[in-house]
Image 1 (cartoon, rainbow, N blue to C red):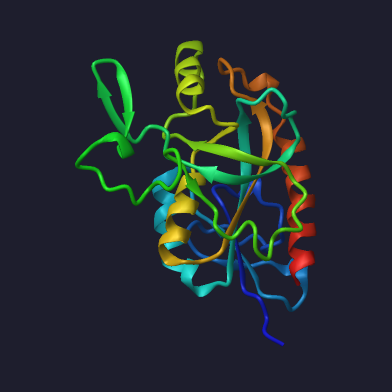
Image 2 (image 1 turned 180 degrees about the horizontal axis):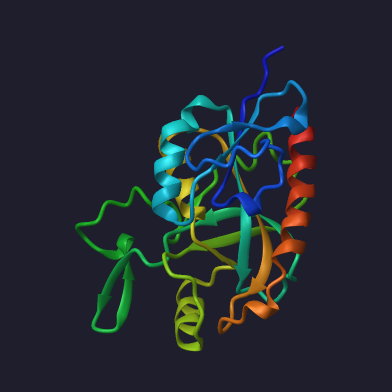
Length: 224
């Protein structure tokens, strides 16, 4: 029987509750002790798109499946804090140019290669409808930004332009690297807060991470 090699990748240690025995060094895979002799490793990348790309590019090709996990802010009022979602599309929301006050994404620029995008300026996950069709989580459209949204003006512009459901700082990096390397991947996020003027008193990261952990373990057990 062929053992499935799974890499769980998280930006921070706090977002992943799998047991890696205190081995928290960033950028190196550590074995998760939660699944007995199964091959499940955890990679802590560091926060942001660039650290994620660097860490994941080094190791993704060594695995049969990459699972990105973490918390997210929600633009979608139909999602509640604590909800766990599966990201089916993502994009780099601040990659582009400011044309006299009008934002234009890379796909709309003549000299820019369209390798980052597939449909409507977003990258999709081509593996979702294959072996992972058993997933019952809501599918959402993600937006990856270098700067977390925290003001009415910025949030309004982003919402009207992209019409995304959630916001993270790493999601599109996972899409990009895994699609370029042809490595199957999944992205699960738990809603810790609504995207609104920044007020961390309203965030419920612990609750979100607890729910995320339950979904992650169930998903992996289903595969193994």
